[in-house]
Length: 348
Image 1: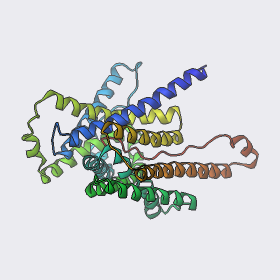
Image 2: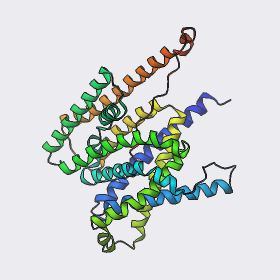
Image 3: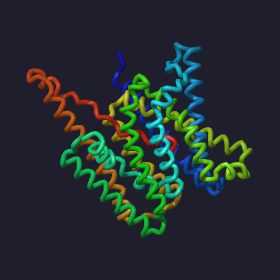
Image 4: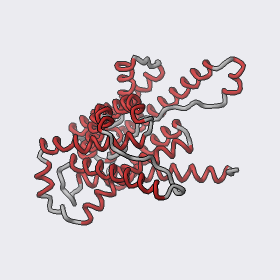
């Protein structure tokens, strides 16, 4: 039987890995998208290449799983044109999500990145009402109001510091809306791929590799890439490939964190990670922020954490009400699952 110490060490390792991979991915993508060393003005190309890496890794791990079935398991990967068409609506939303994420990161600092994309929960509530006719309780709406207030305070203080990019804020709002839509469409499309998240990942990224091509032509990125002076430099492709590997890895480590803890703990971990990421960014880039700027960040994080807690209590209450009276006492100590926010770190 697994000891408490062994279980605790595994949880600590998984949570630490999630934090390291997620934070590293954000900083690496910031380097690729707006570094003075690279000066490559082709965010769609960067995102397209990350999708290509994800597709290749899916097939590589599928093949390794067949060769070494006792070492690890990975679902068999194959491409069915019918499933490509069936998942296309989700893939369009997926392309919007990762594109707006990267465009937001390109135009704002890493420290402000969390504020820029902080309205996902608010859009989740709005889209759930409009598209799914799901009502939201007063306390949950109050938490959304807190998040909105923190967002506007953060934007105001970023502007006061002279670092505000309204284009970056616009992309951040679009990214938040896309993340919320992606979560809704994912739940609709998952049954098409037998509820296998890795098969969905494959089809999303296969479709994305084709959807990005006309966009890259429209925005003139092919000529930008062909004229890029570091196009044949090893270190450029090393960091590009590493960003693709991290984008693939975040899906794995997110699943492991939920498996070893719970969806609720995953949400809390993600909120805490965002706070640490903001602090690290300020220290690394030597950004001096005002007290009100920090208050905006704390307000957003606090509102997000409060929303998660409110939804947990509501789901627990609804769960207990569905049980027979004789079983309620035994089940009150068991916390029901709370679905995590759709992970938006991938390629962002």
